[in-house]
Length: 289
Ligand SMILES: [Zn+2]
Ligand SMILES: [Zn+2]
Image (cartoon, rainbow, N blue to C red; front, side, top):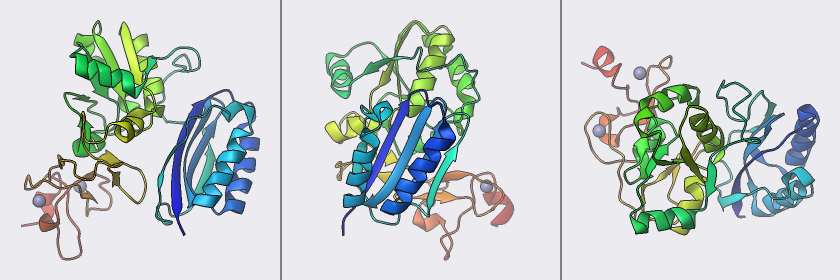
């Protein structure tokens, strides 16, 4: 049995999100899919796993809907257990930003730049800046060379990113994220804050790595599923993740052993106890002598 994982999003007006939720839930249940789907009046954002055959049927189902006919579906190999369950929800946004409704990718957003075009920028030595719109723990394990980290641990901190990089408002700026969905609002927001020349990487880091493995993107790609990271063909990539405690190179992630903490960080095996637990930097001194 082979399994597949798909990732897709679409900013498109959904008039009756609850109805779409019910329909998608029924289809996913029949096909035995697991994963997460967020539906809002502004669109859909989904990651699903199932048998390769079931995923093929789901894709055919999705594309029959005129709203999703042209949706870009990224597909990778699954394991069959990457998500604990199926979760399909209606929310006010498909990626929570708490930005005003005027930041609307259906109306205005950064120019979509194909991976092949970004590759040309790199090769031609173009003068441009990359802002990585993912959280810092995602950046820590893999990022484009010379990319600026967002400084975020939550996408709701987007206004701070615009303030932090106000010195490059008039430069050519490209935003990047995993599959592209976060960049739709992030690049729209930068434009609203006076950034004059804003692009976003089409298909995200996912598509770039597929096309150009182990080239300008260093390290590995963080995923929000049981894989934690995926290298998309760059099996011999250089490890750039660093254990927060000892500095050893590793791609292993941990959640702070203090359950109420919530910090998610990189920690090597040697810095964990016999049950694989480890405290974050904020709490290690208090609990380990
Ligand atoms: Zn360590
Ligand atoms: Zn902690």
